[in-house]
Image (cartoon, rainbow, N blue to C red; front, side):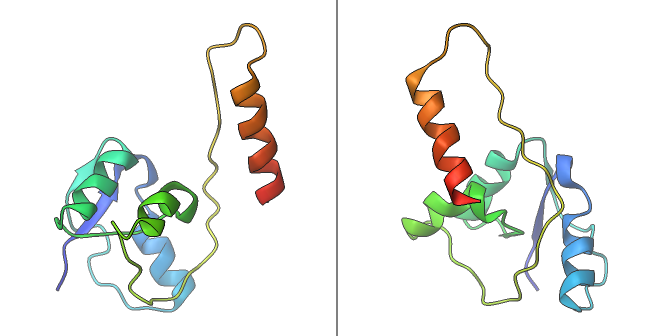
Length: 105
């Protein structure tokens, strides 16, 4: 039985995934919690347990082979990710990032 890792901001991810995937998951909330998703992903990368991945956030780690999928059902998430920055003059790097994100969805 693998340790389930949790991001405290998305507390219900495991229970929501189990329900959507039709998987019985007793004690869905069991396991350590991390205040940042990046910390939970790093812990998963170092073998501390299994993280329910938000593909957009772990795509690089998957591509580099630092994380692997387990072949379990993938389900849509209703979690919103928000891109923010400090403001000020328009920056070319942010403009390119926003364009790439829009093209991907």
